Every structure is written in C-alpha cells, then in structure tokens.
Image 1 (cartoon, rainbow, N blue to C red):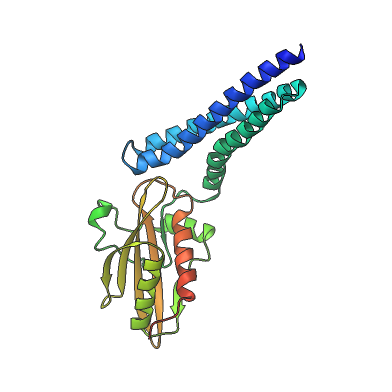
Image 2: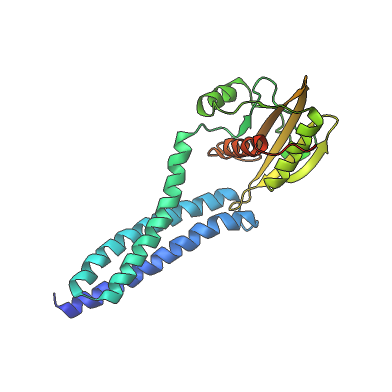
Length: 250
C-alpha cells in the first residue's frame, strides 16, 4: 500500500473514530442530565449510559488502528486526531466501567444509618418517600456492618442545643435542602440531589442529650433504586467529618 493510501485511510479512520468518541461522550453526558431534567426515566438513562460505553470502546479500538495506519503514512494531523479519539473514547468507556466495578464492590442497599438498632425516622419527608419510611431491617444492617463498619454514632462534647445548631449548620454547608428543623425533638430532615442524574436522597439527623455530651445519628436513604453505589455511606461519612471539625456555636 502506498504512503498516499496510508494517509487517506488513516485520516478517514481517525476522523470516524473521533466522531464516534465525541458521540459517545455526548451520550454519556445526556444519559444523566436527560434523567435529571425529566426528558426520560433514569432506567432509560442507564440504558443510554451502557450504549455510550460500547460506542466509546469501539471508538477507542478504531482509534488504535488509526494510530497505526496514520503512523505508517506519517500523517501527523491524522495521528493527532486518532490519539485524541482514543483518549475520548477510552474516557467514555472507562467512566461507566469504573462505576460498574465500584457497584460490584459495595452491597446492593440504599438505606444507611449510624444507628442500626434504632435508626432515625423520617417524619416531614415521609410523604415524599411514598411509603418507603421504615428501615429495611436486619439483613440490610448486616450488609452495612460488613461494608461500612466505620459509620457510628457521633459523640460531641457539648450540650444538645449547641450540638443541634452545629449539625444544622453542617447540613447547610453540605448544600442539602433543609425540609424540617425541630430543635425540641433534636430532628433535622433534608434532601440532597445528585448532580448528574438528579436522584433525590433523603437525610434525617437526630441529636440526643447524654449528660454533658450529645449523640448525633444520621440516616441517608435513596428514594429509588436498589443499590446506591456507596453514595449514602459517603454522604454520612462526609457529614460526620465536617461535624466533628465544626466549631460548636456558643
């Protein structure tokens, strides 16, 4: 095959791979934002996500061949396009694949609590959860203990009023939408919306006095789905880390 043929084939294949990789990234972005803005259901978004990964993989493979062909033809423009297509295609494939791997490493649960014996209860948010209010039970608790043994009741060395205000301030700093704040009951309820798919996850915080200290428990539960891919545990862990380093109001 002549250098001219290598150049033409390399250019065509590189451009095709680049177009496919761009389409894969567009599908990747739309899969979540389409669900967030109500264009389609989240299950449709997951299906689009899967196809964006397949297209990204195909683009990366085509780009690999294009790199070889363009390199033989010494067409550096086609080679650059092929390398860019490989990076974009690998990204479109790699992100969903990494999420799939992560989902396989965490339990298929979506209701997490720092107190597994007496989880905080949703009150103000109960209607929004369409009946899904009660904690799932011992089976979910056992899976949580194995996967997230670090999630425990937080003990603050301040009276309840100060601990409650600190918990409320921390919840606001987390960017959560505060739905209910009942200081007499030590209860805070809030909703957090995920950035990409717009999933609504509900949080209830319970502050309880214990002599001159305060006990803080947190429960975070998704409204839909079976597995949260560790999102609720991560949310509680981030909240507790901020809370324990948050200056208690005087």
